[in-house]
Length: 199
Image (cartoon, rainbow, N blue to C red):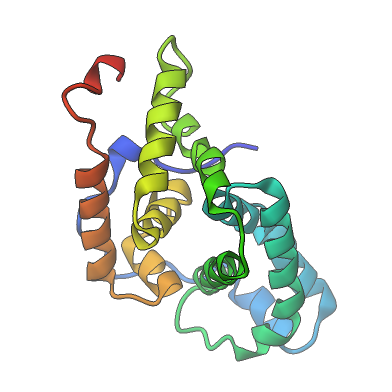
């Protein structure tokens, strides 16, 4: 499966377009809300992989990600009726996944395994060359050390390619907050002079 995500070094500028394209899921969502099972299943198939990637990157394990996504899919049967169309369906859905990850952590998920999942982000940036292991180790450690809010923002914008506006809607914060978080993540993740020899 090929990710459409941006490399970490190409974080978008601190501004985003003011308008978003129409929601490509609008027709399926309307039919799913009306009770059409096939439309609901089509939505799940369309977004399952991205839901799983987000959960995996925020929990660090495939098993935990699988559990979380299954919970979200089951809950979505009822929750989809509450979708108001104030954001794109995918943005709303990814916000639910992030919140489910929060709940999972509160129930005692093992946060120490997060590093393994976050290391996947490194592979999105550059092809392997003799220094890839160093980069993976450094970035996994750096991302795992970020405040959870910064980590979630990096996962959604860098890992999943959401715009600042979409990430803000998914996380329930202003677009300007997303811009600030990415600026802060850049500052915190910038390698020190001693680290650059492996970059």
